[in-house]
Image (tube, rainbow, N blue to C red; front, side):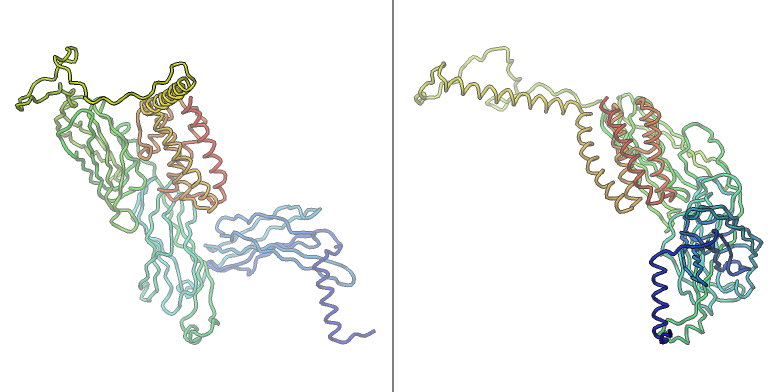
Length: 592
């Protein structure tokens, strides 16, 4: 029987749909094939690595390949098709990744054995060549990284500039943000806040997109640093022909790599003295001042230390002075005023609260503060000279009360032990007393019972109120409990929103609040640095496991804020659990 042409087409489509909806039995063993397209690959251009499975019942979950010198995309594309030839059914499934190669050479993507459905398949190795781009293609666009001259030290803040250059006869159609390759550095966030301009290279004009960033080495030893960026460009001639009305401009997609920076990251030498280095690396001018020099025992005064210059302001730990038992010092409050967009130059102010403890104090002692100058590879001693002060004793005890006689002359208050010579007269015109209540009546007993209960309850409440106010630690702890309960709700909101910065901000505040109650002295929780928390945990005898959990969270918060080392949002759930465990442990330590 012959079917009309239209009927044949419909039947073919129906069979295809049925094959897609219901898996058909396959024949033959599972076979795996791998290929790279195109081959050879041009350096900087995009290529595809594909794995095909024949006669497989499904697609295995495979991690993306990892080959030095090749940058693979994070997601794999999946595909499948079923065919029937002479009654034999075959099914093909595939996985593919896009990738780029930075340097010319010969590369091999290694194979592996995987489980597919109810069987296994061996993926073969794939070897291919990467050719250098021709001079003309290379000149169309490139990525530049500019850094100050070395040597570089761990923790040093390096002002850097990234520049994307597109040749003047091309236009930039699309671009991703540059990404750092390698883990020996961290960098400040690269955002859409960039500058545009025009530069010339080898006599040619280029459109420039410029990012000002800060790079910080975090590992010592030899390392390579480079950035990569994916862009799409079109020739200006094609753009003019489109008249801007139709999106039919031919674009060229390419991946750019900055020239690799091969360098040796040095570790900082040991400081000359213990406890005098605050982590400052750069060029700084340091001054110190006291708000006033006429002081009183027990009354606070502000000491301010100001650092001006350029360096790793965000990576410093505020130093904590030790002026002996005659001065009580509290951790500082810091404020930073940047003088450039990167925050590499500016003024850091540290405000300390000091309280003199004795009237014999005559000076604020000299103090050493060390910073490290990478230009001279040496420590710099900022010797802060002593400041002379005069400390008055605490306010005297209240004097005896003085009264004025009828003529306005002062006379001492009467001795309460001596009875007065005269008695005030009774008030005339007494009113009749109300009807008395019999002392044994029910009304009398009930009224007195109620009054006694009221006085007893008032006394208990008053006693508790006075005891709470007398116990300053209990008052501080209750206020801290209320604050922590509010902040835990903010932590949950940050986790739900995937907001890492908000999570670490609230987590740091919660941990500081709890750790502050381990101190026997009143401590302002918000002024505690990570180093102060470490000291309080050690002095209070907190268990090693709990202290390590608390400090690990605080260190992660510092790394996120100061070095840009943010964990992926999917880790927020685990971090929240760690925070809750640390909080439970600290609460038990405080109560005990």
